[in-house]
Length: 245
Image (cartoon, rainbow, N blue to C red; front, side):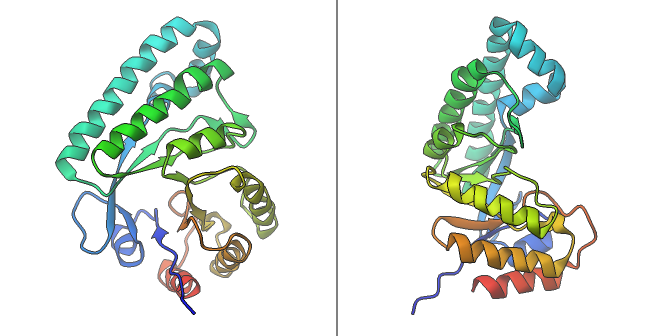
């Protein structure tokens, strides 16, 4: 019987632990035997940071022409950053962060999602692949029907943040929703380690439940953000590694 080892993408705020346990590493230096990636902010995230998300949503509703112009400038800078940083650092993958949704769905109007967000992601992922790198998208929130489009554009989606995971009960609901979404997804996913549970035993239980319900195909185990509580990460990561080997 062949045992498939699930790869790990860890975002811990501790590079030493990420390198020791992870297979996909976001780092500035070369790491032998690991897939190394760099992070670049996407155009929507750049606009939201510049104007504030509430003002940005208002602009997107009231002034499409201005938003298109500013967006295209931001997109051009993202493409430039990919070529400049990717060409210099030769990453195995590039991790684009471009949040545009909440648990309730997309935050921006339909025209923006269909005319700017989705097409820009195709351009960005194509540019990443010209460097020989894999294209990863980190985009918080529930994108609903847009998940299908995004999964046809990106190699990996992270973190599929479609429902809270603050308890094992919430995590189970998230798993069921993810199962429905995955039927339409064409790419791999990086998700499933809910450090926000704040309890080492519960986190291991959740990871086992994910693997049991979703299997191993197309799955990279990943957390979503650095831990928000004090966790004993060394034994936790050892436990996760034991589960997936």
